[in-house]
Length: 223
Image 1 (cartoon, rainbow, N blue to C red):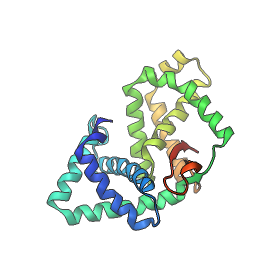
Image 2: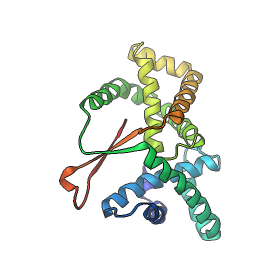
Image 3: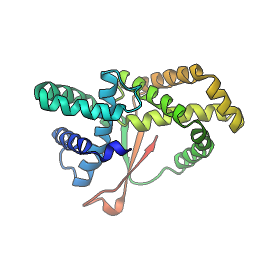
């Protein structure tokens, strides 16, 4: 993610951190930085979907350029746009994100099994898998799921690939996905609809107890 190393991203992240601070009090600096990084990536995706260029290869750069242009040329419109997004993002953070002190062994094993089966498929598909993820990002945001969009989209696609790979060998699964992109798209739409109807936690943020008082370390998992 070279775009995350850009000055434009750092500037947008700094702006987003102020919006985060409006809604969450008593955060440590590390928590502000963690949440702002997640939120800024989500805002980049949100802008790409809202202005309909999520399908572009360089959509992240375009989102950053758009944010910079709006902030400079029409700050009131920019503030209104970001504030509207931030209200939804905060609502979804509180609804979807669960803070825990330790791992759930069963959940960890399930994630490991998924990664072992899906990893090789992702390596072979490359850009094709990325296109499915971008479609999932767009579907999530249009459904109102604007928080942790990269993680959620990635896991939606992985779950679908896992389902396919569970009934076929690795090479057969890859060939099926390549030959049936519409099937994958339909499965993404179906899964995103299910997530939108679910009212519980979807993302687990594990807090490192060793840093609980001063600087809390976070690790993120799919629920």
